[in-house]
Amino acid sequence: MLRSRRRQAHTAPPRPRRQCTPAPPKPPHPAAKKKPTVPCAFCGVLCMTAWHLKQHEQGRKHRNRVAYLAGEMNVRCKVCDVHLSSGLNVEQHNAGKEHLLRLKLNRGA
Image 1: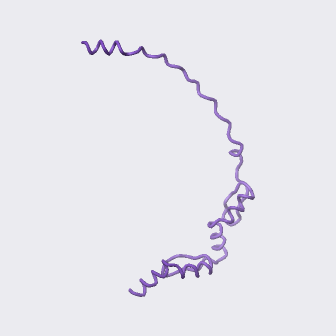
Image 2: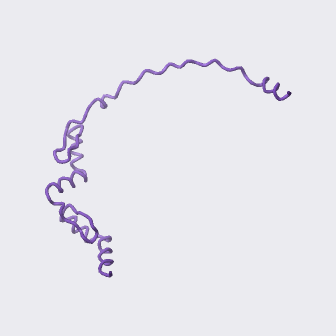
């Protein structure tokens, strides 16, 4: 019985709950309203501005897509089973450590 009295003596009465009103929603950012309108003719990617399109065109995926469509992506290394996009890539690939290692392994087998 002593324990129950102690608990009752130390417990504070419950506080009244405040009613919170939700904050009004923030208006959307002006850039969120814009939709991409500048298309890439090769990839089908939609960019926001001409600057974004230029950035896209400098990217690896775009360059690979253009090379593929131009028929330059037909080069394949049979040793490594990779497709290469240009003659320069073939030279660099053939001089690479991984390609040379695979060549040694294939010749030894």
